[in-house]
Length: 201
Ligand SMILES: [Zn+2]
Image (cartoon, rainbow, N blue to C red; front, side, top):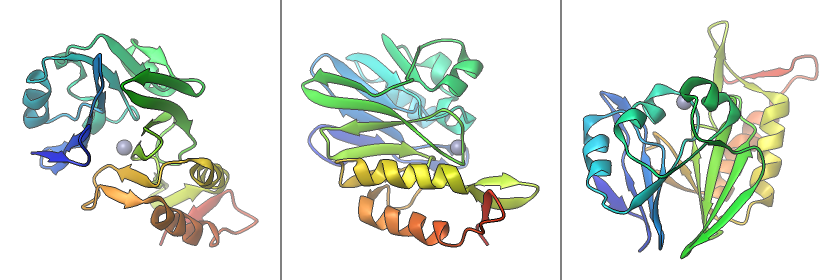
């Protein structure tokens, strides 16, 4: 289902069965900016219905975020270096990229425990699509954060002008940045100087 955030920012909400990530849709002057393409039929159909040229940005390589890629036509494609290893196409976001298209689009790398090569997309300095970058990973059956990457992500968030972060798969897709920072700080303070990993449980 298409949901509205602002006059130019929309999203198709994530589903659990099939597991398909939220799809961000930002209406620019020349392009419709799509953040993740999901892997459900519903997301695919909704994307097919967009007549404007599409610029697709992929948050990371997991199938629930990129599954529909081969079925979506687009004139521009951006992804992280690790995602590129899976899809072999698109421009790698290896620095901050800022583009003006009626809306201001800012692409950047996010240090993430969840997935290497995670990419964020900030719109008008107000909203930042974050994919799954804030989540932990699983290591030997345990849910953990990498302490160094978590600290780097906290620093990145602190310096970001966006007040709202859009977290994939969350019931509340639009989250206040301060609320997310609080959650990440609460995890970071649990670190143990002897280990590079922080247990979530
Ligand atoms: Zn993921």
